[in-house]
Image (cartoon, rainbow, N blue to C red; front, side, top):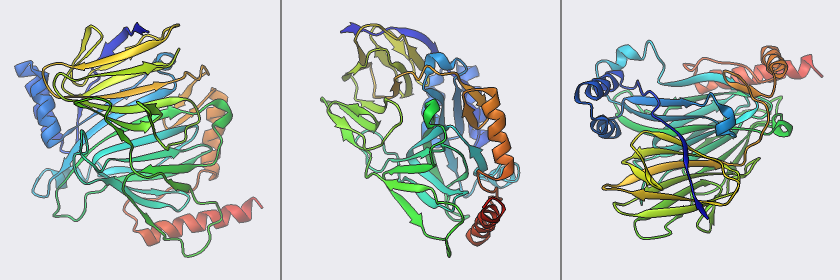
Length: 378
């Protein structure tokens, strides 16, 4: 096997949010001290930033479209929190998706999910769940033909403080699978809420509980969480529509890990903590590397340098299909985007609702919408 090469390396901007003033302090530390490792360690400890990695060159990252690294804290005695929440809800109110999958990989904290098909779930991790820690969770949501969903941070009561960290990853669907029925696959701890008092006029989102996130320890000082695909003889129970792998690799100082990347696959690596050697090139903290596709077999080599390090690896067989991105809808052409937006306006994705609605009001909105749709289009 040949050694892999880095095609590009970039550090995407990290934006201040939740709590925003923490994030602003980190940015000033970066500019004043010129030592991003200091800000990275403070961010890991206290939260306050998000890093949205939107891949504009989708050919080189195919089938991955976006990765967002969230690290947030909601502090009960933070006076700015109660001002900020009037400007920005603590989460992501109802919004539509079609044509791709959202993967939410939670390391601490979590979300409360509600969707336009009448499903509510709480999922997440109790604490930092990297390394040998337990409790990571995954929501693998196939949007398919379309739905709306809401993901609000699981912050508890008003006077509770909470820590949150997760990755959200957008995975494209093949053209012939873009209109499949929506479904969710869950790994790790989650709680289901049966709130429907009567049958909806639409099929609820299928929810499949797949057990815990698999972990493999192939060598001394190495631990790998297998979110999707396989590593070192361990395979994730997540079912995917194309061949891919999502692996969270944790290395103790001086440890090495090797992974045989399948022929022709896309591969991206992002450093959550520390820095690693990829072959002979250093990948610093919070940097993303896109590896060169090869016509021969390639073994990816990741080595921790002087301290503990963590890497998120995304790899997959390219779909090699055109990509038309329209905010939260991913299709293959502008015509399909226009059709999707027409379906959204016509109600085929389901209704929208306010994140402030309680469960009774939300469920009433869902039921009334699907009763209307059943009558209007029978």
